[in-house]
Image (cartoon, rainbow, N blue to C red; front, top):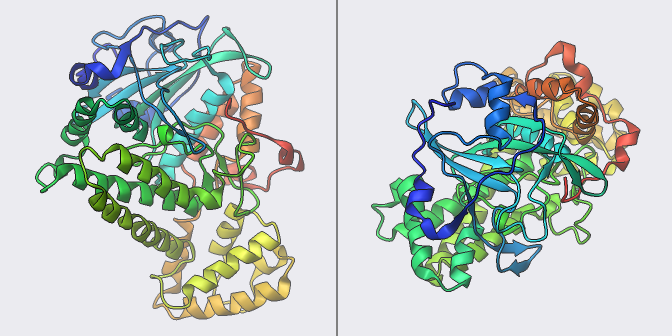
Length: 481
């Protein structure tokens, strides 16, 4: 790590968008888990010594060449505009370029107070840090664009939330931490010159293909619309609900980040709400596509000094088209189809209605369906359904549709590669966190290893794919998570 070459282009090119801040060390840090795949992205050929990881990612020492800073931004939170937010508990350490000439942001979450902490303490707790570490790596393995995480550290620093907890840090790795809220802040504070500098920065570093367009800012916005639509389609396909889709949590690059009260559905429920603080269900599973469009409208408004409303309105028309195109592609794969034909939509909808009426598990239902031989007139999966006759009728129509394809085995292979066996269920994360609180990090490490291969059978790990225990029905996740 001491050999990393920082370029710090955000620090150098956007001096009016941040405050320089040094991290506040946590006490007696301990390594909870380390992601080798992420280490490889950062040219770390082997896991650094725990003492080194703890030294630099606990806030105790500053990496040579880094320039820690807290970014300022604003955003719409639960539909209401908040004039100033910003990095209240995290620091952008800088950017490094790896051997493949890829630039990566290094962001230390839980680094202590900043000018944007408001009434907070600038800390992240162990449970939320473990949840972010596991979720970001699990999402990557599912093929969903996301920030990554190199490591998570525990400490003996006390933190008061609903109860007394311990502080932790996560070293988050991402192509960029550009948010919709960055543009909103400089638009609503009437600093349109800095807004333009921010947009030019985004074009130079992340949307270079748009530079030759007649209106590069419009071309960039179109790409943001498409990336956001594609991301949310991927979320929907695996039953993932972000939980807090505020505009300050929306990535300009179409990445999943700021993991808080997220959740993968267990029982299929279109109105699933992972965040028990979301009393209105604004950020429920079924609302995510519409909220994505609403957030893009906020971004379009913030970009209005650079792109006219008529142009952004037209660009927003790309959202539903691309979301449905990606979602249809993903659904076809989940059902083992060679593409979407007339009649496939109602057939898929009926399956979702069947599993919702019977309160069946979303992930397990699709995985079991993947294992069925459509050449058989009777489906073993029918025994799982309360509406037995309804399922049998559906199975007959589905078999007929699959039989219209040239190669039934290809359809099954496609399904097994599209329907994960393992997801980060709340009760699995909860169990790992409870053990970690006692100083036993083995379950976190085991889960991390498991979730990097979500489609593989992993015979010795089958118990992680079982239905959640009854006690997990009472688990709640809040914004403090």
